[in-house]
Length: 428
Image 1 (cartoon, rainbow, N blue to C red):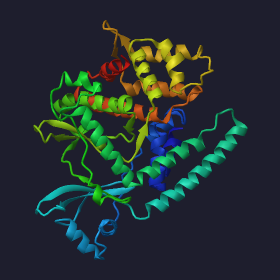
Image 2 (cartoon, helix red, strand yellow):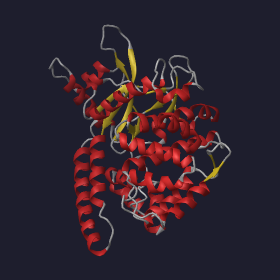
Image 3 (cartoon, rainbow, N blue to C red):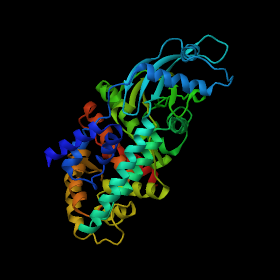
Image 4 (cartoon, rainbow, N blue to C red):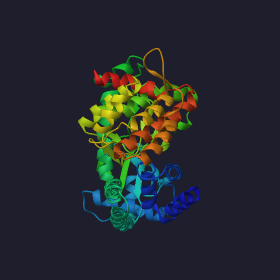
């Protein structure tokens, strides 16, 4: 199975961006594939060779000209020279597009410039992705039909691929990403930065008096189109590459940032990876500050699911496994409501008790990290009638990322203890 899994990963890589992203989504769904396949797909990377600069700058010039209000036709070079102080420079390439850094001329009468990040979509990527998605969904329908005949498995391929298709089209519309970025810039500023009084972060503010804790880059909306996104350039370093002392300082904010989106706002960043969480310097006092990037893919969590998840976190950390399995797992959609969990309870309780050991404070000291527990749960998910809600798969991925980064700065970090104050406060 290991060799077949490796061949699958290589095949998806060779098939291109749509299949790479599909594999990445499958890699966080333990209810869809075996643990061996899951582990191999988690190695997928969407880094691809950059496309030609001239093509990218042609797309940029055409899109910018479409936003100009004077209706005067210009040569591409004239448009770029009018907008930017110098030729934009490539800084990163990925499967759907690439990012350039440039100095944007001020639109006012002054002679100032602004450092900006320019995200430019790959030419013809929309038609490529559309064809790939059509083939994938067609494949899903065929496989579901076969599975319904030869197995007792509940068909899931078509539904999964339809959901993946919706997410892929969201990422291909940079105006949608710009709207998401502006939304989170406001919401997170209200909660994390100076003057905010939202209840959700009281426990964090009591221990951290900095006035600017989270930054989301400003969008230059007037220059943004479906294929080009221009936003404020933020100098920084990926949190995973920061010095250990900065990681220790910022991880409580990172955990609060994640849980705030999940349990308070009800919309959260659905593409968590190390390149999207940066450390930068606060413009207010120069202290290390978190910066969240890339809002192309956002997931929603309704109020009922947020309440159930809050209860599940509290029950998990208080050791109430019976309620967690019999009630919370069903309310969150992991198990059918009519399912008898008598056989499943001892299996799950053993895994959770091995991973969490009771301490005198009625919390639990973690003996193994979140990803180790997740690996054990993956085996159970694949052998019982579990259905992992898509948003929860992304939650696990996000918390796993935070824990991995945190442990590099503080080997004693406990993701469960870090999450508990937030969940307890919301449950009150």
